[in-house]
Each structure stands twice: as structure tokens, then as C-alpha cells.
Image (cartoon, rainbow, N blue to C red; front, side, top):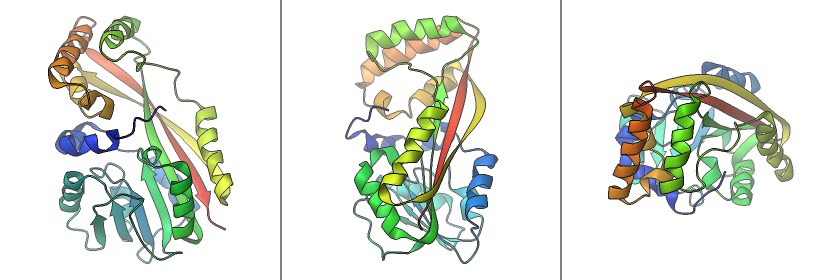
Length: 260
């Protein structure tokens, strides 16, 4: 994935739309996390980059003490309010790099579609230090892929993206090799019992709903507004000209690593 420095703060301006349109994660993923590490009322958990809490609830519902880090002030406030009924939930509005805690503090540290914003050496070294012995780092993300059954939409999209966002569309579907490569990073930083899993699902959108989803993507948000509106109008037209719906094929990857 190509990461453009500075875009990590763009989500802060669209927190309501982000919460509505960004997907949550599948039950099987949480089952695999809990099989690797029991989380209960005595556990201490850290989420890196909570956003609007798309990945938070299944872990929060274990009754654990839950600390979340969020760089965006509006995102942090949104999640603070969203989970206000959980008395052991706490949000810190700061960067992961600025977060301070004692070593060996957490039973589980997890990050959902967020850890790629953090430089690898800083991220893994700090996670390792903050985990208790036997603690687990769970890194996961959602990777949407094009509509496999409507080639005409994809062809139209290629032409539209070439005009407005050259070189940004497409690539291959997220693979097991991609997941393994991310999992293997943890070896360099002293982790053991490293594994990965893949999960699959589809999501179907109307043209307007798909535009709402695109409006939560950092690189799309960064486009000048008038240009972005023209871009989105052409995307909407392409979908409506080809049946009025689009299906995304999601691959979710989970990487698990244990501190010895």
C-alpha cells in the first residue's frame, strides 16, 4: 500500500460518514483473537487508532479495561460518546508516538486498518514494549476489491480514475502472500507464535451509497472539492449506467503475534 504522509488526519473531518459507511469486522476474526488470548474483566487492552470504533465493540464487550488512542480530535470525541456507557473505556486524543505508558501494561494491543500509518520500527518496537509477557498484538485490515461480476463498471472506473486520480485504481486482489508478508514483520521485533488469517465477504451499494463510501477515503477527501464533485458525479453515472449497483469483494487479513 502506498502511504501519503499527512492523509492520516483527513478522516477527522468526516467522522459521521466514516462511522456510517466504513465496515465493521467479521465474528470469525474476533473468535481467532480470543482463541489466541483470553480477554476478560481483568484484562487490559489498547486499541491503536480507534477512528469511530468500527472494530471496538466485540472486544469492549468482554468487560476489559480498554484504552483507545486516536489522533483526530473529532474522531476521539465521537468514539468517547459512542461508548460512554462502558465505564472502563477511555480515549486518549494523541498520536501513538506520543502515547506513554509503563512497559508490560497490556494483555492485548490491536489496530484495525490503522497501523500502516505508523512507521514500522516505531510501531512494532513500542507495541512489544507495552505488551505483557504472553500478550498478543493483533493487526487487521479490510481490503476491498472491484466488482468481479460487472467488468463494464470497472472499465468505466479505469477511465474516470485515469482522469482524476492517475495510478491510484486497482492492483491485484489482496492475497495470502500479502498477509504473510505483513505477519512476518513481527519476527524482526522479537515476537513469537506469529500467524495470519484471511476472511472474505461482499458488500453491495447503490450509486449514491458508494459515493458516500468513497467520501470517507483519505486520498479521495484530499482532492479539491469542485474536482471531487465532478469525479464523484462520473462514478455515480458509471454505476447507474451499469445496473445501478456495485458489489465490493472484501478480504480481511488478521496478523497475530505474541510477546514471549
